[in-house]
Image (cartoon, rainbow, N blue to C red):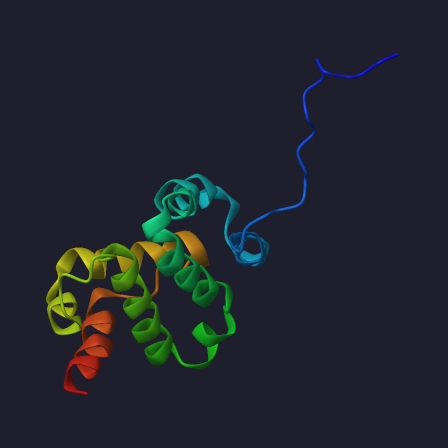
Length: 136
């Protein structure tokens, strides 16, 4: 008679969170050489409750890669808003203040590099695109 009381419970191999579909979609097109950076800078934050909602929103936006090809300006503006929400989870700065924040602009350029392998987006373009958000 084996009760199996000393056996480890097998965990389900199916993903139990909302992040899996977005990450799976991203990993189909994202450059493999930046996987460690994506995990360290973004994916791992999914374990921290207050970051879950803004991170999921950001990852879904990133996974919708078609927007980059069609309208770079709109895509950059949308990604910037999502990035601002992720890095400012306590909503301490306004969008106008975030637009002036140099570190957020750098993070946007880094995001383009590690997710899209895109180094053609320049700081000058980002400034011009974000200036239009500030005018609205």
